Image (cartoon, rainbow, N blue to C red; front, side, top):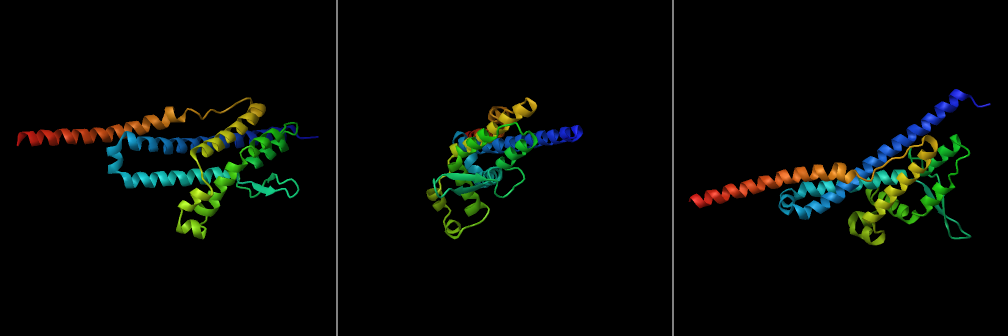
Length: 228
């Protein structure tokens, strides 16, 4: 007979995993929204961008690398090709500590009556995007393969990674987490409004302040020239 106290402890550990997963996804989503909005502001505040282009480019590159590495950990699963059918087969692969398939099997282990096949099918629906982001991690960011080290732009031709692909993988993760969180603790997580609640306001405030400095400088310069 299963010990009741041990069962409660195990259930709490799964909930802790879910909460940690949601925190990780919130952070990834925030960084992704920041990256996208900074791309928008380079045209909205072109003069500010021109004055800090070096720092801006470093920030954007760092955000992209971190987003790819973080998502790759979530989807750090094994993908094999079935010889008879040619279909992709997924397995746990290297355990990163919080990969999505490991999470599903942990749910199944603690709650045997929960169907995790639906979650596995959701993962399979984005298998191409998963392959692409892992390729970027393995061949360019985590390790440097010769031809991509010498010419990084080759990777964009061999394995194009679009913003839509990253968005899809973030959405997939939170969908799976919410699906099983609602079953285990009757709760769900919303990370969709990060841009409006956090990113947009802070970025606009910083860039508007910098833009105002340029406007004040132009005004004073114009007044100074007019006095001569």
